Structure formats: structure tokens, C-alpha cells
Image (cartoon, rainbow, N blue to C red; front, side, top):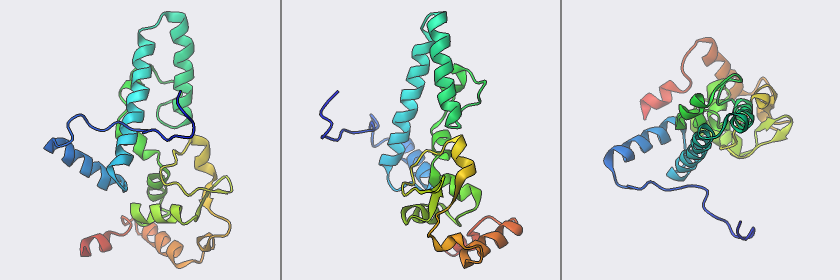
Length: 189
């Protein structure tokens, strides 16, 4: 198991690090999900690889053992919002990195309209303005669960908790106009 004091890598790097198409795809995904570096993307790739490997291993088991373990895996992934509750192992095999990245707190806050951009969402989380079930969460990579979706809100001591805060009013106006948040700022850049 290893020494608990020593940190070990939680990701695998690409086998061909300088392949042009792979580099361009990595940059596209990093930009689309507001990731800080490629390490965050590689962690998602490794997690996906682990999940798919577990599903492939289950497909090779006998019927009794497979049914028991399959239901446990599907239940766990359904709790995380990655597959439906009545899903099958084939659904696990069709998961993509984008599915995992959509469940990050940073992405969820942006999609919900609590931030004008993915980078602003990351900043709001890191500065402690977001709370889940009344507890501050400062990790943008936090994997949000189905049960966390209802309890996600502004932190108690945050100035954004006030509905009359300028940022909240600006986001409400953009939502009312059905405009993509922060489009004008992106066009100026």
C-alpha cells in the first residue's frame, strides 16, 4: 500500500506527450472547462480509465458476482450523477472525460449561472464564497453529487450572499435577457 506520509501521483501522463492532435485536444478541453493545467485533465483521464477498467472486469465475471458488483458500481456512479440509476455497464464504458469534468464544482457553478465565466467560478470557489450544505468548499475540482445540487449556495459570510450584491444583480439581468454570461468581455479580448 505504501507509506501514508509520502504522496504518490494520482494521474498517468500520456504515452505520447508530443502528439499534435492530442495536444490540441487537451488544450481544447482545458479551455472549455477552465482547468488550471494539464494535470487536472490527466487526473480526470486516469479516473475515467479506472472506472472503465472496473466495468470491463465486471463484464468478465460470473452472473451472481457480476450482478452484485454491477449494482454497487452503478449505484455509486448514479449518486455522482454520471449514469442513470437504471444504467448498465455499457453506460459506464461510454463515459467520456467531459462527463467527469461536467460534475466538477467549478463547471457546475458556471452552468448554474452563479458566475460569469469558468475562471470567475474558480475564483469564487477558491476564495470561499461557495458552500455545500452550509460548509465552505474551496476546491474547484470537488466532484458534485446529486444530493449536493440542492444544497449548493453562497457561503454564509460571503458578500455575495446578499441578493442586492452587484455581481448577483448583473448575473440575474444576463439570465433574464438569456444572454451567455460575459460574452462582451470575451469579444473584447
